[in-house]
Image 1 (cartoon, each protein chain N blue to C red):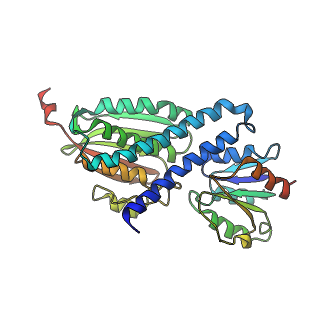
Image 2 (cartoon, rainbow over the protein chains, first blue to last red):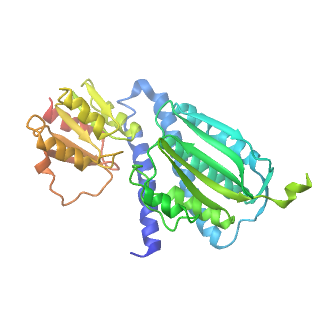
Image 3 (cartoon, rainbow over the protein chains, first blue to last red):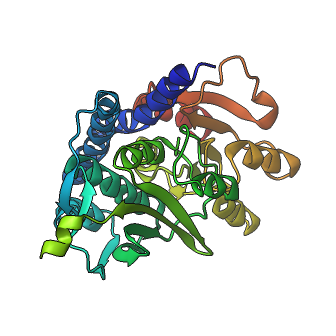
Length: 226
Length: 116
């Protein structure tokens, strides 16, 4: 099958799931009338996720047109903004979010919007595939001559074939991750495309009790001016 | 007792809420449902998703049909997969509900028909 058509099918499948949930929640208002507030929160949270995915898909086209400017970006600020936005979703889903910065580099070479999406995708994925009362960890540290932003989850292990594919630093096309149901691999593929645009690599570390997904960004030379 | 097996917690809750006063247990994967059955919790009916964490719905169906005490449990498959043209009656599947089209009243109709 044509890769583009294949990609459209994957995207369609990925977007169908949250829309089906929203529809079902709306239909359940009568049955769950003692939980209306809960339903409303769920609908907001699922819709936001779907909207985020659609926005990311539209950005793929803009990538080809070179519409995203590369600039020195304060990595900590971006991480703070993403975690602030996702904080309520984590609390709502009874997950903890732990953040640790140990990088000395203040600035990385990136596009702020794309970097935001990559980190957001990783964190949302971690929340989605971790069990209740578990935590996801966002860590920023220096790794060789780069800055590694990694997100550790305590969900199902990453299949070895996906891990192998990621060893080269990018993902060729969306591939369903069998151990992670409902995953079409679209989020990972988008994160990979965004990262490549920023001359950054994505990768994964397999743990016995979960997975860390990371992006390695080039440090900005402007950082040395500080 | 009715089992709802779906790794999408919200979807499972929606299905369960359509069943009114019936006693319902929700499972996020096939293994925990099989464990409950092994502990003599035999459900009167099961609503089953196909794409699950770990063993999928078909593996679960094969398990059920292979045991004497579970082979005749009525099962409704709830899925986003297109299963048109597939005959699942050999597994005891009495109906298929598509996640993007089903309504709470369809869930209720199955429950009323097979559980009462």
